[in-house]
Length: 127
Image (tube, rainbow, N blue to C red; front, side, top):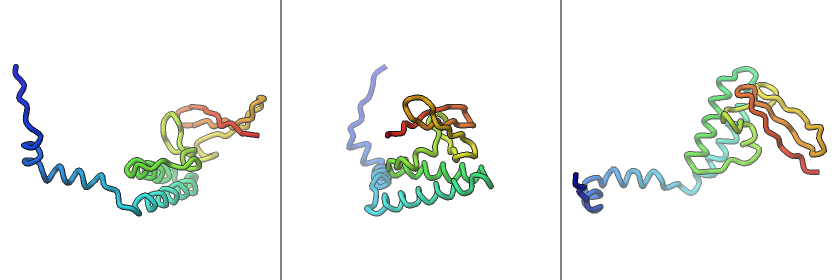
């Protein structure tokens, strides 16, 4: 079996419109990151307030916020990241579908347990 090599110029000339469309999708407008960050904050705040009344809606809002961050390649700030489980990546509302406990060891910490997957992780409290 022989391999046939096609020059890149032939590929781009025949698929020029597809290539340019994909290239233009990756270009981010200057104000898009700022708008995306504001939308993520609003969605997470709404998800926390809706967690008790409508858990499915709050999960959906949090997943949309997470998708916005991946779409625009924005790292979520710490206070937004801490409402997601580190194992199952689902939205955990404080006191609704997660449990927060203070550690009693010499190292002061907060233990966060996800009620959906059962994973427990700690946040060290600096003194």
